[in-house]
Length: 222
Image (cartoon, rainbow, N blue to C red; front, side, top):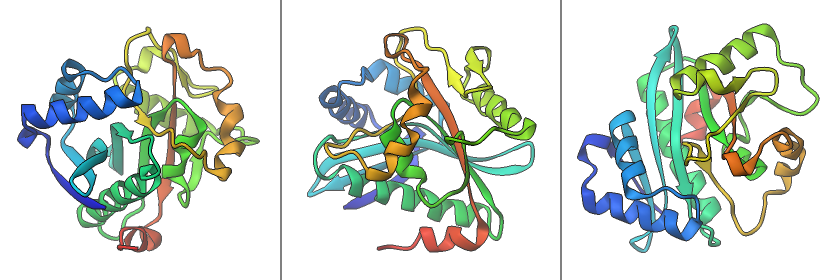
């Protein structure tokens, strides 16, 4: 899997069409116009290709939220083929590598939105993932949910008790990962998505912590 990351400003119209073609195969409703807006809203775009075939991409940014180092994935989508997991792992590994360079020796908050339990595959190995089954979020964790919702531009739509963002039936930015074979570990997160209304395109705000001592190891090639 070949992975490359560059500034969103360097993303060409032809590449936008390539992203839209992958999304058309995935059926997530991300068309060229929507993706063009993402190019303006995020800083980095990462591609994963297998034999020159696009298998996944992510728009992201590395920034500080209230002083806290953060890696935010605004939108990501992956092939539905057997290459999905490797594409996800490769892209997240590259993003973690960049987080190490941007925030050396610091813990980093990783945040995104999701619409299914399989998407938590990108968070496996992170610490203190919120929300999670059987865990009552603290006041500070609920505050983080609100901060992320504000950063994603949906603060008025968040229920911070369950971290669900009420959609408006339009495509919503999220980590879109639906492989042919659902990860076994994802089953334990399924109940978190019960309140979501797919017809409204509801999403779940989720975050976890990549600890400084683990972050460098997660960014290494495997």
